[in-house]
Image (cartoon, rainbow, N blue to C red; front, side, top):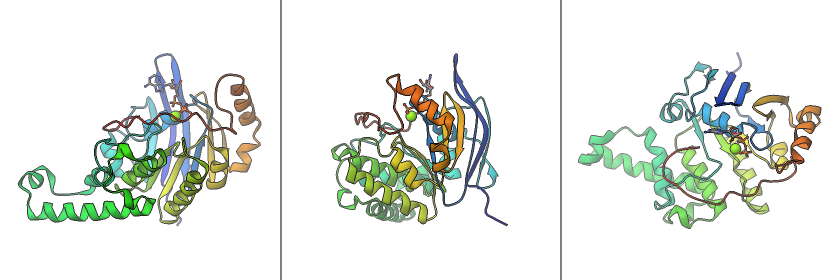
Length: 279
Ligand SMILES: Nc1ncnc2c1ncn2[C@@H]1O[C@H](COP(=O)(O)OP(=O)(O)OP(=O)(O)O)[C@@H](O)[C@H]1O
Ligand SMILES: [Mg+2]
């Protein structure tokens, strides 16, 4: 029997007042896949991430993770279930070091609890040392090991994005959801990012990727879903969706408005590192 899909969602809808941000969206991500989620600005991509990771309550939808039903009710339960994410607008603890930022992600898997921390029990101290060690190896893994002691806010834009990936990986996810990880990166940073995503996939973690850089999407993804105005307009291999008339129409239609065409990257959002989770 083949392994179950890592993520299988169907019928996901989300309305904001009069705006139908998602309408009956479904997709299935297989083990070891990099799966692309693309579409013009405002198509509903980030909203979909927010729903599957428990930030927004959907109006409807079915959710399965590794063959088990899961309810994306809170960010914490979703992280424990095995989905981790990064944010379109980077969200780091700006005044904490890179190492501490990753340790925060790791704490979801620690067991000492509040009393252990307050009393600094032997178990807590040992666990904290192991957490720091693991965080350092994750920083090495994403290529910023030498920056462990630098405050997050002092890191370059590209390094902050890699730090977010390290923090997400610290939760030991089965699925890593990346919301525009290449936004604001230069060409060589993008090449490094591509290598990193490929390596994460090879190491057994599936990836759901929102990205405007079509070259990156087409080079990395096995399957792609295209959203427009909250609806799935195409699904298939990169070659299939790229030549799909509805996709061409959606992007050309949007190109007459100040929105993103499939061949351009969006203007990078300025880095405003904030504390805590959010969209
Ligand atoms: N919390 C919210 N309240 C009201 N409307 C929202 C909210 N979040 C998103 N929207 C709206 O839902 C639609 C989809 O937004 P979303 O951020 O998911 O798009 P996107 O595909 O990620 O776009 P982009 O490529 O620009 O990041 C937009 O019209 C947006 O204004
Ligand atoms: Mg978005």
